[in-house]
Length: 209
Image: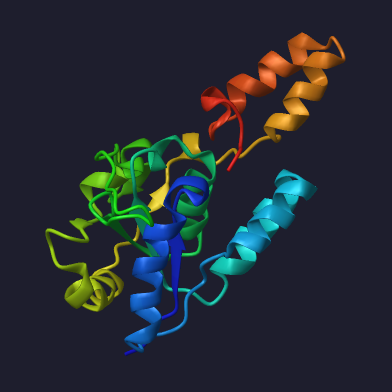
């Protein structure tokens, strides 16, 4: 059964490795993808956080599985967390695939990065757990993603569990740029309060890339 898949990844660092995976998915006839190309990212970034969120939300439409491609710094990219949370809210199954062993355009691999699913707390069967304890994590090279990606996606879709982001992960809050504007205006009390309530990305320095 062909499935429409959304690929979540670190745009600046891993576009080459992502294209290796994405192109394989498409050429093997597995189905369409909701991956966002470079031109769309650049255009949305010029327009701000709201435009990026809208682009991601539209990219997720019609997908049933989100594949998180993990490179060296994927866990540090706030938009990956946003994509994962939005995926969970629309009941997408989640699969994580390490792509650090895929060679880039210069023939180089990169270091093994932290799993971004560690940072997502979900509620399953009444208990709060890390998403990484529920969703499978594969290695594109070691686990032969070339021949097995379709199986991983299909298995995840069939075995998808009823999981939701925990209440502490629900508040997406204002954008980082909005917080900066409040700080510049001198209203630091408001900015600090909003910063405490914001659960996604602010502590890592904003929603860039």
